[in-house]
Length: 159
Image (cartoon, rainbow, N blue to C red; front, side, top):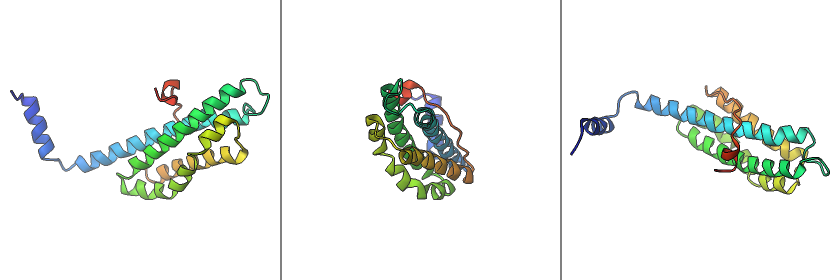
């Protein structure tokens, strides 16, 4: 038995409206902003801030825990940035703005392991910061301004 709601949904799916393309692009930008914002927030909260506070130095109080969180944040950041680039493909302007950053994002993949092992350097932290700033700038130039959003611990750990 087909309900009127089912019939309406079928008709709507069969005949896309003129604004469907606009709505898709709006959703693409929204997803891009959300993913890039989470990546930026995780990077700042669990990599840049603790690094600048000296939490990664040998003998620092809470070093092991800070390094584990930084490693998780590194993997999370990489994952969210890859998702943001994928989202950007749905918007021509955003896609062009983000395309040059793909190599930088790919370079972050191995840094999560270095963070967990405590082998992080100024250059490594600088790489995270540089890629995040590049993504933020690309989003802003395409009308999709990225704001840092710190992910919850369960988001960070993949739960």
